[in-house]
Length: 180
Ligand SMILES: C[S@@+](CC[C@H](N)C(=O)[O-])C[C@H]1O[C@@H](n2cnc3c(N)ncnc32)[C@H](O)[C@@H]1O
Image 1 (cartoon, rainbow, N blue to C red):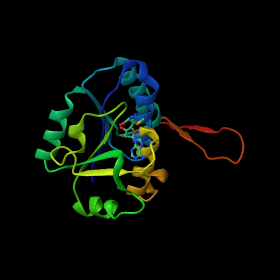
Image 2: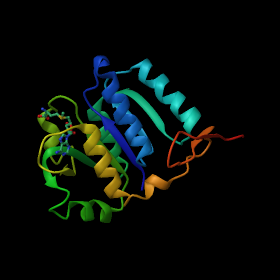
Image 3: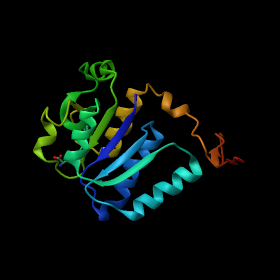
Image 4: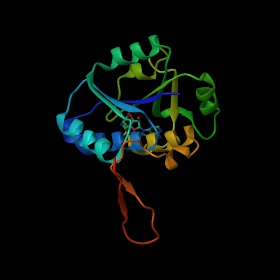
């Protein structure tokens, strides 16, 4: 199952939050991120460097109008999962089972400020999923959702093409330089 994150509502002054959404997507098993509607060279460069040093694959696309992105994804047979405080609770409902049993590629939509009301509608979101029904953050919601989707297996993944790898230690910081 291919999983891509669609970040809606990026503002250049939100640079850190959007880059944290992207780093979280990569570290927690998504294959790429699409930043809707705007292009931001700083983020593109940051992510390119992370993938170059720490491995991939992880795709980065920017500036695609969000409606078009969702339409193309669904036309190609994928489903969309909108992470929202108002959605079906990931803990108390069977929504994750239904998402998994769709067996389809997932486009995960995360917002920033208030998202357009269309996001909640079935024409755009096949699933509206709440990581608990308390407001928090797109970074937290994405991490928990992906970790549950992949049952934690993404945390032991080895990234291909990495030049750097952490050697897990009880104390201190050890980094391995991987030769090509
Ligand atoms: C800081 S919140 C924005 C809240 C905004 N005031 C609103 O009314 O939509 C940014 C994003 O975090 C995600 N989010 C926040 N809390 C969530 C929750 N409990 N479950 C799932 N996603 C959540 C959603 O994707 C939301 O668009």
